[in-house]
Length: 204
Image 1 (tube, rainbow, N blue to C red):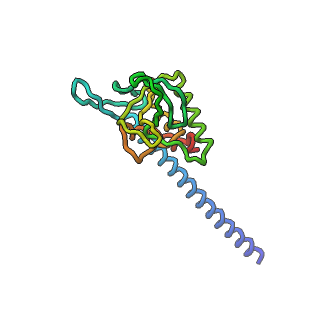
Image 2 (image 1 turned 120 degrees about the vertical axis):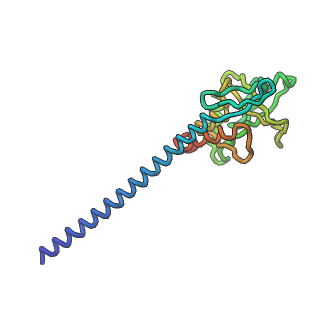
Image 3 (image 1 turned 135 degrees about the vertical axis):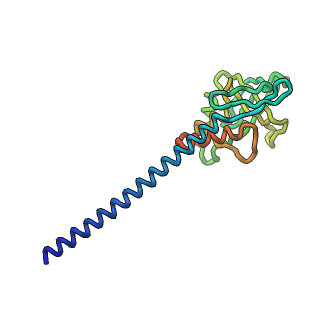
């Protein structure tokens, strides 16, 4: 009788161990699958990001060129401007010599700061933008003459050869605005996905 009880207990223990090992193995397989999937997405984002192209006109002809991570160039029609103030992670005040040195408020195209309740994230984005624009000399690339209800002009902001919106998205300080397509939509979105997969900034 005791032998039967012992054998029964051993059998139950063996079943429990097997069940645990199966669950443990499944969990590890799912985790590994998730890691591999994220790695694949990251590689794709990096590839697409590095192979982004824009068009510029040379001698009256439109030519496509690579403007990936290490090949950024300021558009030749961009306006030189002097930074006066960083208002938020997506808005700045500038003086544009080509426009009678008037103070202008600029809404950076293609990005959105975190929601109002995320005050820490919003302040971090503002601080990082200040750091990126240290010498106050920037270039503005306008896509239209439109203004928003706050009388802000819309522009892509460049600091030397850095597309500021892309850099902020890559570091996880802002979100890519996919509602309104623009010249650098793909670049900023791929930068955001890079930050999301690696868990940078607001994606932690």
